[in-house]
Image (cartoon, rainbow, N blue to C red; front, side, top):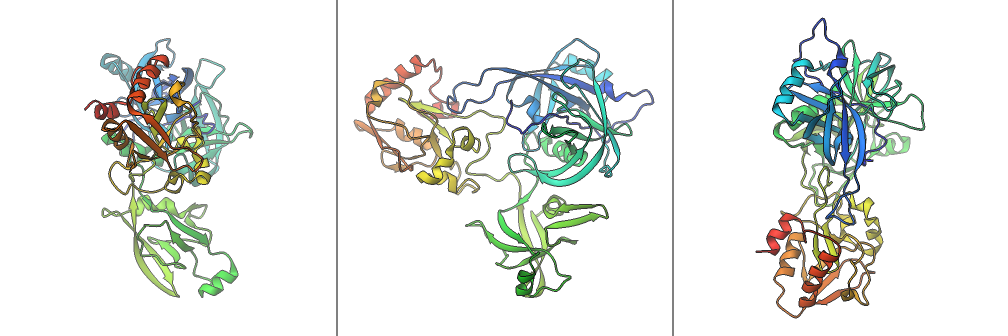
Length: 495
């Protein structure tokens, strides 16, 4: 199953421009989705996992598009849409996706089918306001166990700002409507309008399901219009602690009315106007309490980062009020989106690779830490674990690992691979990226080629250059590897 937590539910998006009709039935705009999932194989990156068939729910939104969950269609080799009360299955493709917020937008591939389908299946209306806690909502979708659309009812029991996937955060609704596998991607409705998209449930708890509210849906639709998802602006990594302890408050000289979070540190290399022991009192005009919460209404408190998106200026800063040594002052903190990380998430793509002799090299992505258990690098001395949250110091910077054990060949006699070691240098030259490493391999002029690693347990590997190239051809053929490397590396290798 795709990587996202037990996501069972439905995502729903509607255009606020859609016009209601007296004869309109929301069920006419909700479709069943069939997807063939081909997950990445991180230890054999030239191939994919065996196909698995999944189904979910989607619904029509403005622009002749269909909204669903990212986890319903991510890394799918083919996607089909089944209209309501129809046996037809129409081919679709992903035109926008955010795995971080678990949303995806689909479009029917054939123009003729697209026009005919949308003529009979109008977009749903997206409600602009959050439902109140206790209000009744209906979840509509295609859960497993039947072919017809299903409607379950429940109430909104909680609204919170919390983590999603890939370090993202956003608003989330909790509902007690019954949600099952297959509901994913369908709408949650109130008064014939969409208030959110159900995207996950908890299998070990009864009647607890989670919904992406329309505010996050609209943010996604706006963000994805240029074809890429940048995500909301966020502040650089800072360390805060709550200001609840009485001794701490006395030491800081705070009055009873002064509340907020205590700034402790920033990640090394980040420039900030904050100083240690500053108290973050307000974000914009919103007071932050001693637990880091902001009162939005009489019934709703949210974590303070919720307001970053709303308060980021065109210059990319957020105004904060701080208390420093008893004095109140304003500072501007930098907010960024689409940060150019040294170790990004692979997202909906597949791992890149380059094979040289018995070794499969691949650029490190966040998913590798779990798929290849790179956390051992903390012990072995790999720098990747220390820089996982860093922005690139220069264009193209990346860390490189061997993705699996040696591919079988006599050339490996006496050598072993320890875990998935991080490559340090080729022929004594420190590498900047896998592209740089491929250049160094290509331009080797001596009789031998040396591969050194950061990992303390990993041997330095020295091969005869000509024998290594000859072994590469044999290994590719023996393992039915059609291409020695991903396109961008082959372009370098064949120059």
